[in-house]
Length: 93
Image (cartoon, rainbow, N blue to C red; front, side, top):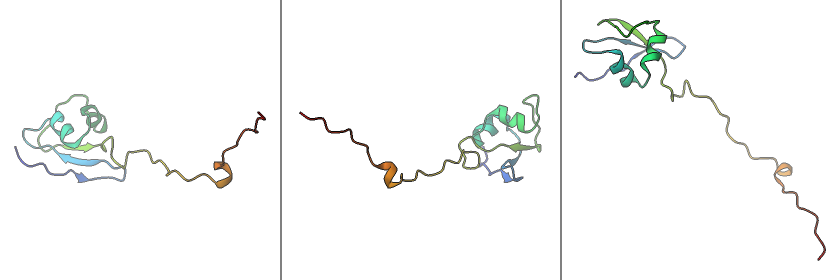
């Protein structure tokens, strides 16, 4: 089997383009690029899994990639007044 070539960059939406080579099918391409077959089908409006050599397929971003990951802001330390613990009044013994 030939060495894998990276998919070329495409549009600003983060999708990449893969040109189908002899011996490839959607399952092979999906596994190689870390996406689901259904995602490739949806990105390319494919009703079946049939593809042809030379066909250009849009590949969606990987599920865990930075481009598709939710951005979570870093935790910031609480202000000194908010971080102080409130103690209960002393109970006489």
